[in-house]
Length: 121
Length: 106
Image (tube, rainbow over all chains, first blue to last red; front, top):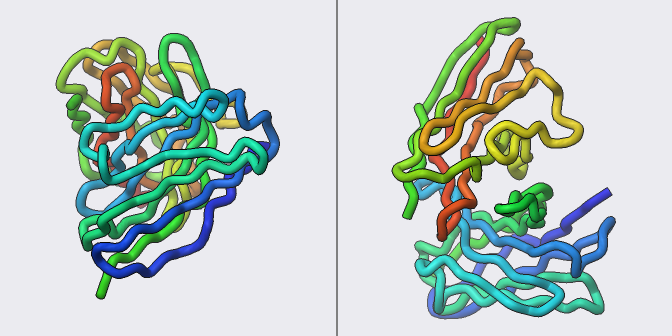
């Protein structure tokens, strides 16, 4: 079955960066796009962006351009998201979610368990 | 950005029928999807493309709508359905989510 295993919780200092991982199994990694989503109590769910593991092509929500960088390692079927110049407003649970193409749109049909990021000095 | 508006909370009794609404600030055609999230868990896809039931999801769940007005129906509601339900559109960029409707059982 499709599984997305995310890295663990992070406690990081303001101004630093963090790199989250999402290891996929149970399907061909390059056959589906990967989304990243931010969840906070105040802002709810926000779509950060999407990456095509086959080509490395990305598309970002304008709000997260410059904040998030999406990459993949095809050899290990793992997607990564690096968050830079962290502030307390970046404290959230971050999810990866597999994108399934159902023409003419994508749906997020499998989600990782989430990774908590806390930004605090 | 496309704003999705949901009512914040509902309370129903087991066995009843419940409808959860989602209104979009602009047309999303049928690019509307519904997710269920229980406390401490990740969201789970229930309905995609406004009305298509995701594989493995009970037929008690159904969706309808197009354009700007959408509905998720649960009939009959069971105790295990206590959760927050989110709508999400993938028609317009960026993809956006509603704030969620918290369903409680009486």
